[in-house]
Length: 89
Length: 89
Image (cartoon, rainbow over all chains, first blue to last red; front, side, top):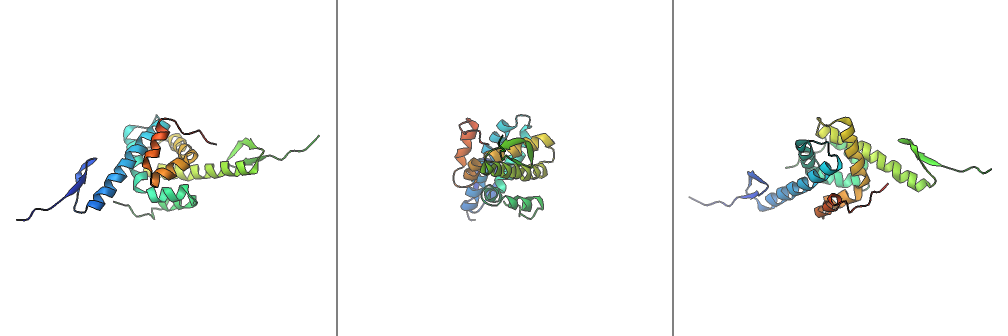
């Protein structure tokens, strides 16, 4: 019998990782999603809680595309529309 | 009588500018807002049109804060929550 080390984010107890770096990246994404959800809710109070959460998670998961879009290349958002961007973790 | 040159974005015929660079920046922000509105709508289909538009404009107007948040400093989003960020454009 061997003991294995597992990792998970305190923000999502369901999801287990064998790799710590992956768990860290996932936790960072969930943290960003939480911040975004709060900001979206403040910006558009008529948003339902789950809409703001869904948006927060979506934007956090595609943060690289949004970072590029807010930098020099707004057109990269078109890739999100044609679903060209891989669904990250 | 003197003739003055004015500028405006084809995306918002109401808003006139004396300075071309300002008009360009405003037009670029509206273009980004349009892209974002389409992406948000695709990400969360239950969003109403005006909610997706309101969000698109809000995020486009604060694009620098979001660019930083998606880079190294997610905590800058907290400034948006305490309303510390000036209302640009």
